[in-house]
Length: 261
Image (cartoon, rainbow, N blue to C red; front, side):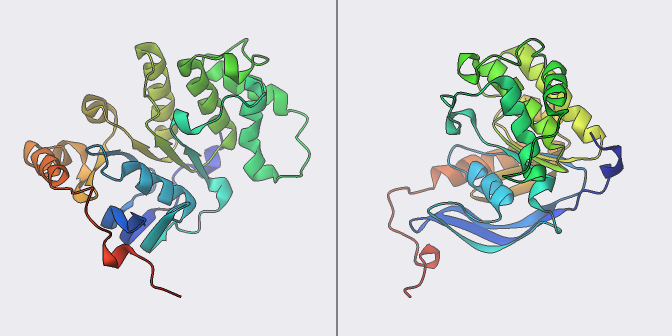
């Protein structure tokens, strides 16, 4: 890790951000910001737009098949300053690489696609794997890993990315208690170094215990700020009622459909 980066991560600001797929809104008019060095959980009902919003923070766009309106201002963050960890089902584990090679992939954003891998890369990757509890796994194919071991390997890759901003989508799904505790410890360490962390989560007890800030989303913002106040009973009831009012079979929203060329 680079001690010189502590406290310098730029804020991410959203201004009236909406995301729609085929004219159906997934995120509606979200405005707010993630302060430098903050640690924020994004929570909400199923279908609330949590993953869509996180993907937009990572890509700066709505992604394939999506239309984004409004603005995401990332404070001049370049591609090497941001690390994005999607949900495990979105990752192909059939690719024939080892844990060491997966960890080394964390260096690629800084090296570029055609640059030579540094001579110390294998040693750095092995150290990262030891740091996440995978000592002795360097030569093991990723396809042979359990869900928890694979998530640890992905965290090792993030260690080598050494990014200022970390975006994680449901990073603890289907993990055992020990793996979850170990990876939460890594996040706490990164937060202590002044990095900006944003994670989509569903376990509200975990959010209350480990994330000082919270964004409660139900396509629109229900609450955004200190976790204890955001996760109040009235806010959670409001989010549930908003979700119950969604009509997924409704026609496309005219405002979310691109104008004809």
